[in-house]
Length: 467
Ligand SMILES: Nc1ncnc2c1ncn2[C@@H]1O[C@H](COP(=O)(O)OP(=O)(O)O)[C@@H](O)[C@H]1O
Ligand SMILES: Nc1ccn([C@@H]2O[C@H](COP(=O)(O)O)[C@@H](O)[C@H]2O)c(=O)n1
Ligand SMILES: [Mg+2]
Picture 1: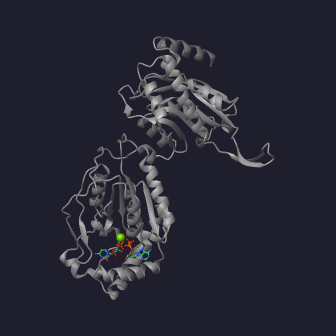
Picture 2: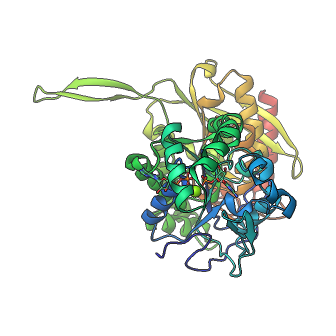
C-alpha cells in the first residue's frame, strides 16, 4: 500500500450510521485508533509502523496538527508568546466533524498545516474513508468528545530528555527554527502544557507504548488486535461482553436450515440442537477453572484443569427449554431452574413463574433463551437473578440469534454479564420480532405452530396456579 498521510488508497463506502449504543450498528464501521503522546515521542513513527504492517487494509492517518488554528497577522507578530500546546490552539469542532464524516463513510477535506508559517492550507483533494482511521496528535486523548470516537487509545511514552533532543533536531531541520527558539518555546509552553494536559491524558489510554517506535513487540500486538477487531461484528467492537461464535460454513449451513420457513420440524430440531450444543460448549469456555494435575495410565503427570462445578441453568419458558438437553449433555446432573415471562405488549413484561435452585446465589448461571430480540424479557430475567443474589459477572446468557437492540439493552445495563450467541441479526420489525430471524422458535421446535396461543394460555394458567 502506498504510504498515506491524510489519504487512503481506495474509496470505501459504508453505511451512514455512526457507532452509538442507541443506534442500530451499520454493516461495517472503521476501526478508530487514537495515538497521543508528548512532542517528538514517536507518535508519527508508531503510526507509520502500524500502517506499514496493515498494508492490506485501507488505513487513513489524520493528524491533529491539521486542525491548528491559523495565526492572524497580529498573533504572528508575537508568535513567541503563542502556546501551540494548549487545547485552545486546535479547532476541535472541525476535527470532530471530519472524524464523524470519515467514520460514517464520507470523504472529507482535511486542511494541511504549515509549521513554518503557522497557517493551515485547505487540502485540495478529499480524504477517503478507510477500514482503519488513525488520529494522531499531542492532545487527542484530552477532549472526551474526541476520545469517544476511538475504539483503541494509545499513548506513546518516551523519556522527556529524549523527546527534547529529538525535537531540537527535528524543528531545526524540518520546521525552520533555531535552537534558541526551540528551547525557549519548550520551557515556556511545551513542558508546562505536557504536564497539565498531555501527561494526565495517559490514564485514558488502553495501551501505553514505552520507547515508541523502538517497541516492536507493542506494535506487533497492536496490529494483531486491530486485525482481530476488523474481522469482528461492529457490536463486538463496542462491547467486550458479547461473544459471537466464529462463523464457519457448517454454522452458516445450520442457520440456513433453521431459518428456512420450509424446513420441517424434524430437521429444525436436529439442526437447532447442533447449534445449541455449540453455543453451550462455547459458554462453558467462559467459566473459571482451576489447575489440576492427574496421573495418566503411563504413570506420567498431566497438568490440566478442573471444571467449575457450582453451575446451574435457567431456561426462559418455553423456547429456553429447548436448550436444556444440550446443557445436561455437557454438564451431567446440572440443576436447571425455570422462569416464565409474559409479554404484555411490545415493551411490557410480567414475571409469571419462577423456580430456581435455592443456592443459586453461589452458582454460575447459564441463562437459556435461543432468541434475544428487544431484550425486555432478558432484562427481566437477569434482574430476577440479581435479586436472588447471583453476581452479574456469574451470569452467561446463551442464545442462537441476537438482535442489535437486545445486545445494546443488555450490554449497557449489565456490563459484567456475558452473552454468547451464534449470529447477530440485522434488526427488529415493528412487532419487535428479530429479522431476518427464524420465526417463533418454540413453536417450530416443539411443533406447536397451530396451537401455540391455546397451549401458552393454559400453560400459563397452570403455572400460575402452581406458584
Ligand atoms: N525510535 C527512534 N529512534 C530515533 N529517532 C526517532 C525514533 N522515533 C522517532 N524518532 C525521530 O524523532 C523525531 C520525532 O518523531 P515523530 O515520530 O515525528 O514524533 P511525534 O510524531 O511524536 O512528534 C523524528 O525526527 C523521528 O525521526
Ligand atoms: N505552528 C506550530 C504548531 C505546533 N508546534 C509544535 O508542534 C508540536 C506538536 O507536533 P508533534 O509532531 O511534535 O507532536 C507541539 O508541541 C507544538 O509546540 C509548533 O512549534 N509550531
Ligand atoms: Mg507527529
